[in-house]
Image 1: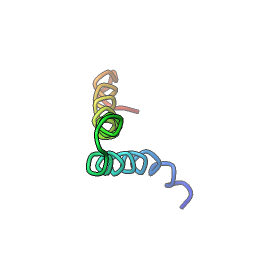
Image 2 (image 1 turned 180 degrees about the horizontal axis):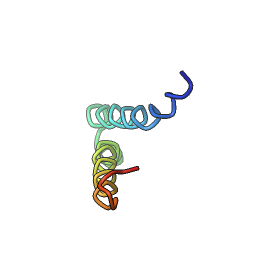
Image 3 (image 1 turned 90 degrees about the vertical axis):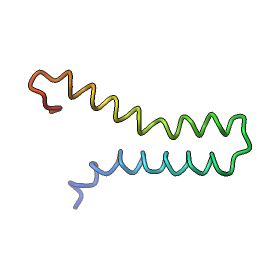
Image 4 (image 1 turned 135 degrees about the vertical axis):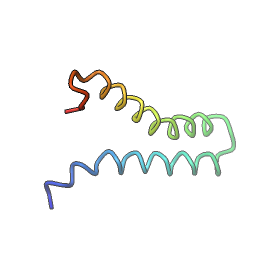
Amino acid sequence: MSVSRPQWRWPIALAIATVFGLLAALIGEGGVWWALCWIALASPLATIAWCVARRAAAPDGCAG
């Protein structure tokens, strides 16, 4: 079981960031809350873009 734990670290971190971003958008009253909301909700998209770019740059087409 301990072998599979590290693979869940980033998905859990992105889920927490997404939930925080949604709560910041709903509860926050503007200003810094909106900035935190945008950053938190953009982090999964930035991660996807980074992974796609990394995969495209791999010589054999795989991100190994």
